[in-house]
Length: 81
Image 1 (tube, one colour):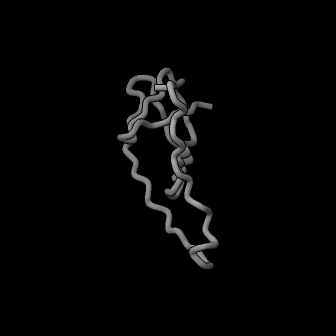
Image 2 (image 1 turned 90 degrees about the horizontal axis):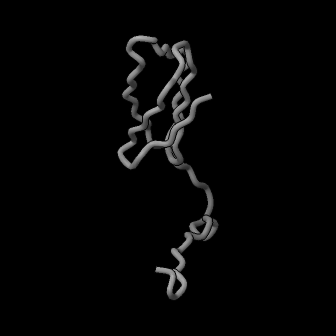
């Protein structure tokens, strides 16, 4: 299994992938996951994919006070900078 994390721009690279057929799963919190069941990596050309994920619709039932509290950033301890 190969795995990668993207940068802020969403780009990623997986080096030294052995040629063959692969299943590709792309997932990110807040987005609908995308699965490609048969992606071929060729020995000569490798593979370049350009994908876009769709925002996941949030459905919440209840009152605003029922939502999880938002975490505030904690200040750094003195002298830790």
